[in-house]
Length: 207
Image (tube, rainbow, N blue to C red):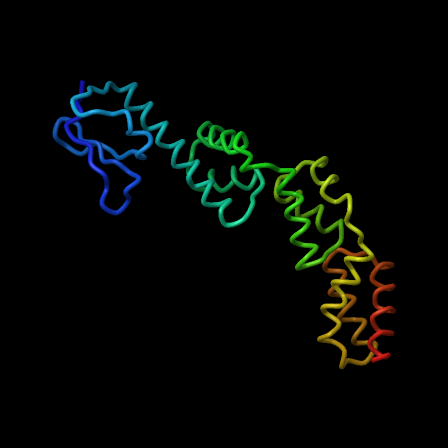
C-alpha cells in the first residue's frame, strides 16, 4: 500500500495540505481533512477515497459559507450554486445539513430577510414578493408567514413616492403612465395603482 512520505502546506493556500505518497505528490486536502494523517501512514484505496470524499465535503461547506457571507441564502440557492460548482449531491446534502444544524441556513429566516430588505429599499407587492421567494426555492408555508405583515397599499404608496419625485415635472397623463407602469412592474394591482396615482398627483399639484 502507498505510504505517506511528506505532508506540506501549500504556499498559496495555507488551508490545503499536499500529500506525498512514496516520494511523489499524490493529491491535496483541506487542512482539517488532513489533520489526522501522519508521515509513515499507509493508505489503501478505500482510505484514499474516504479522504477525497471528506475533502469534497469541507470544500463544499466552505463554498457555501462564502455564499452566505455575502448575503443570506435559501437552501435551494445554496444547493444550486454548489451543484453548478460540480459537487456531488451527497456532499451537497451533507454540507447543507451541517449549515442548517448551525442555524446558518434557515429558509424561514431567509424569507423574512428578503421581505424586509425589499420593503426597506425596493417596496413591491406581496404577489411579486411571493414570486421572488418561489424562485428562491421556498415553500408555500415559509412564504405565507413572511408575507403576513405586507401591506400592498402602503408598499405601493412608498414605492410611488420615491419614483414620483423624478416625475413631478411631467403633465398628469405622462406622470400617470410612467408611474403607473413602474408600480405595475412591481406587481401592484390596478386598483391599488390607481389610488396611489390619484394621491400622489394631488400631492404633486399641491406643492
